[in-house]
Length: 116
Image (cartoon, rainbow, N blue to C red; front, side):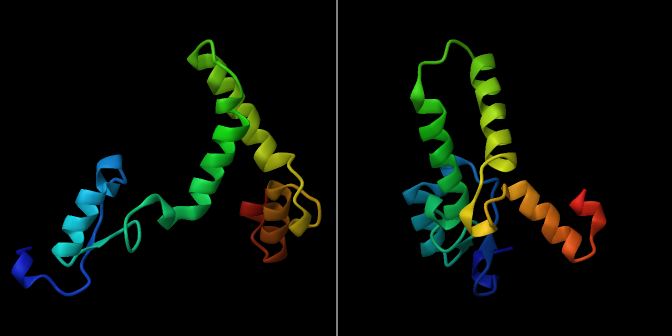
């Protein structure tokens, strides 16, 4: 679509690669009157929940030690993700793990396929 005929508020969708969140790129989108699909500015703050989880993962797993090889990191990552979803107790959920709360939610709305 030619730039001069595009409707106002046109959204530019990308694969969310790092080049698409650079300041220069997002500035060019703004100059062209385009919106980034990652949010209003196209930076990591647009997905605060994911960035928060990534920060926890890095602090609690990655930066705690020197890793010998990729397999060691992968095993530690799988262990952490399992703990994060299935064993971590959250006060706001009634001191139950997120996976258990999600299962209870789907059971409560009658969606047994997702509750399993």
